[in-house]
Image 1 (cartoon, rainbow over the protein chains, first blue to last red):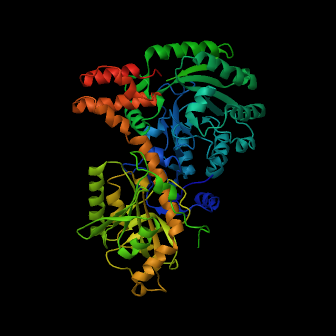
Image 2: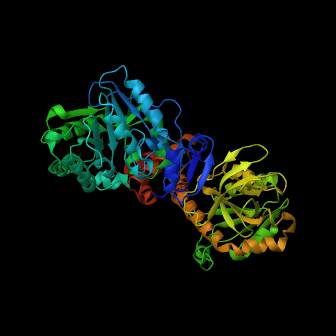
Image 3: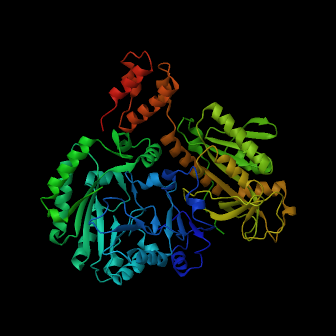
Length: 328
Length: 293
């Protein structure tokens, strides 16, 4: 993977993990920085322009390493949390809220995995069956050849079986996972949208067929697989599109063995939406009529209802309702 | 040392182009006349004006060259002057590129570097130019000093304008379109006192291939930026159709962008068929012709 340059916080520069990462980036210009915010949080940056050639920032995360998940995010009622070893995603999905959340499109990789693990351990210590989500502010697997995230966290969770890890991803980088014995307390959750939406809005995301192949390989090996159909974006032909998607997905995977299946509507906090819409004044998605609901920009109520009803009806032809939940 | 083994691009295509609202534009800023001369010749620029010690050259290829004078204050003032003048002329934003000689702690005279980090030695302020394109050359940190550097303490470049240039130019355009390129003129083994005007011109001349690539990359990035964010001439014609309040002008911009984003292609012809008496008529006509999602 190529980066415009690599910014390295002084504090992590001499750590073994950073040295290992730098050894894989031999042609990349290296720039020393104090704290990642000097580069990442500067005012007046243009996310869209930076996205054409992002830089990698290697940093240490101080504080807020593990946070409570947003309401209705999870697949069960257990206490749930998320942690982000990375900010930003290698993919370029037009509907993604990260474009509005961050000023910079550069990738921040927090390399102090041990601190994340300690905080997960501390958070889980007084709770039963806590679930930890990775992939909220990034894609969990897409930068794996550089990050070594799986190499650290899969063995760690194999020793902490009273907690569950969900890795949310659109990546086909599953070779590392395949080297490990499947864990009962680790769920690989892959997001999908129908082919026309994928082609239109999911730039740089691997093809649906390739992602399904990767998931099928993991499932055959015994990994727990979950499906996340989101974001649902209204179109006149959404039934036809989801029918085709579901037919393809459920012919490749064993539905009985699926861990869970969810759907989630397109939504974005109002301030994020305003920022994204001004970054992409030429994008048809943001020229649509939306409505504001509890501080979130959402699709029109009638569209939301039609989508939910239509997609659920199609979905239940393939899966048992006990595996299903509606996200957010 | 990285060098580019190919003939110097002449930007012939650019010179044929007329500068539309969305075409790429670049402002090149140099401190010295001897730095400017090879660039004026290479990019076929013509003298436009001299004001208060500033000299401005322009070409039909979207390139403007500004000779600012030496030092931070001169550079910041010159950038402000040029940006103000261009804003009054057409408001079409330009990328900015600072080109100049620099001392360096460990590079040899003649090497060219794109700046990746700028530290102002007197204030300690640090800036990080973004690299939104492949620079095609080496990169280096830069320290901007108040007087010529003779000790070269660190393995970086030393100049007298870079920090002020970056801070000034980024007031007028997104920082991704502001870059600085330095050519090493002196180092611990080759002192700054030996540098002559003729030698400086020769150093620039020898790096024209690399400079041309940078200029082309920034012109392309600026064009891309203007295509996205600058309203085309069609919008100017549209707003002339009737008298608009400030609020209606803002609404018109939103409505026009929405019309275009949803695939509308010729709003002027569509609006032509309707009697437009005021801003409300115009806005409602655009809404009527906007394709559905």
